[in-house]
Length: 246
Image (cartoon, rainbow, N blue to C red; front, top):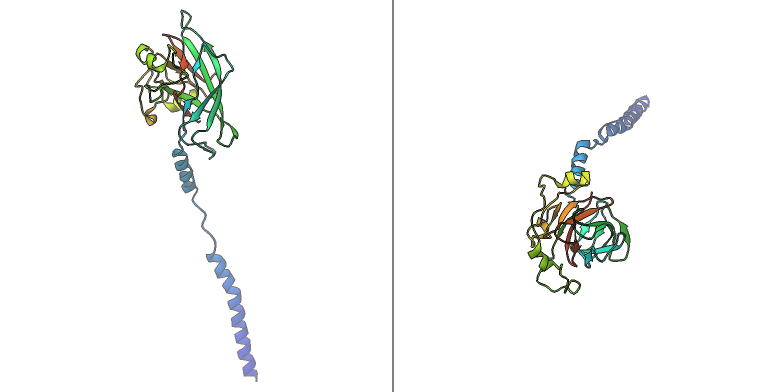
């Protein structure tokens, strides 16, 4: 009888020890390994490096210094989808809205003709208005220079005529890079270049409109300043625009 009690006591002791040891062993092996901070930082940096801050658009209607005043609204439409840094998708055809910030009608002894432009918001296809901080950094002629534009028909300053009347005497600063220019709020002063340059080849800080130079650009007022020493500054309907987000 005593022998049976001894056996049962030993079995109970063994079972109790097993129950106590098992959770301890499990707790020692279940601790998760912390993720590497450096790996997370590298992933974030890679995502930022892939962000395309460009917005391509076209002017909706003729803007001529003789026909507008400071404060007048200007509009353009996106020619390709774009994305804001916060992830908001901007569909092709969305409308950019801005205003005229500066005007000097004629080039004279006091200086060149001037036109200041600043875009401040975008209207999505569903009508939502979204504040936008961008710098207009490039202007270029419409790719179809031979097409008839009803807004500029009969205009002596139309794009086709200006291609022949422009000059290349403006200063050029090729050393100003996109990053430096945006951080300083200034663009390169550049002469007109190839009219039919491809969209992806447009360079920040350049005017591809003969006779017009891009004197400066900024994401804040007065925005982008276009100048002409040979006539009055204007932008045709369909003039291509390159804008950059910060």
